[in-house]
Length: 318
Image (tube, rainbow, N blue to C red; front, side, top):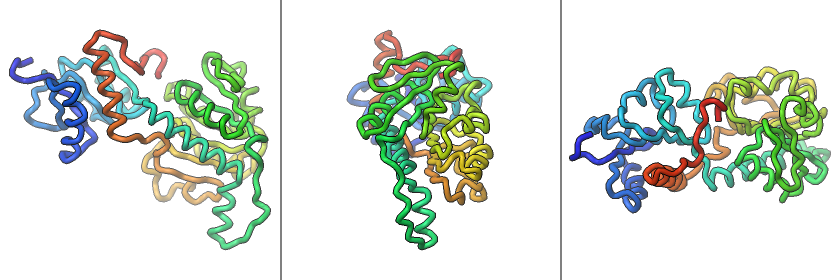
């Protein structure tokens, strides 16, 4: 690396105008760190120590010989790990901040109330100008939300749901201990978890084991008339299976934020199904300042030789 050029952080999802704001965030902490746009032709690849990215083009990360940390702009990293030339020896971190957790808790709580109070059916009645006073739904206190995938986000979501009167179950690879939450773990306990989940909340990480997990078999094990909230990954939900469950009445309503193809194609039947509410991958979308704070914490840890927060484990897949 040239001594005349400082270490560089490259960001690939901001504009030239936004770059000024991002430099302001970092200058207070790292006056020696140069913040640059992803395609800045003046940047020596050997000067790049850090990247903060969303869907970097395949092969690009391998072009930085002195790269120290890859920072995902999102909670998931599958948009990075799909790169066949990914330098796996470089540590990679996920973007989960206090704002991420708070926004996800807001979203899931909103969606849980919408399904509990039959909001998909109410919106359908409104579109057809039908006065439906029978659509009263049920009480949150009579409703059990089951969180499929119980990491840091899941624990925050669970506490918010409990505070709003819902009963909460969780399922994860290992048993977790959160007050008020009935914990289920491992494949042998999945069926028991599903049978008690009137609203299924998917927050699973994207791994080979979780892709396509929400299929006909899983949905059939939910209580009849259940609701589904997918804020995990789009590829985990078999959309055709969900549509079949909606048509049969096994699933009464769904709130979906993530999809196998984004944006959701205009001809996708999920747009038009009266039991489905579609949102555009916004459940835990956070501010630039929150992203910068997380990146600053990661760079501080790297420079201090401390463990990196939210480090991705290639073996576990999250």
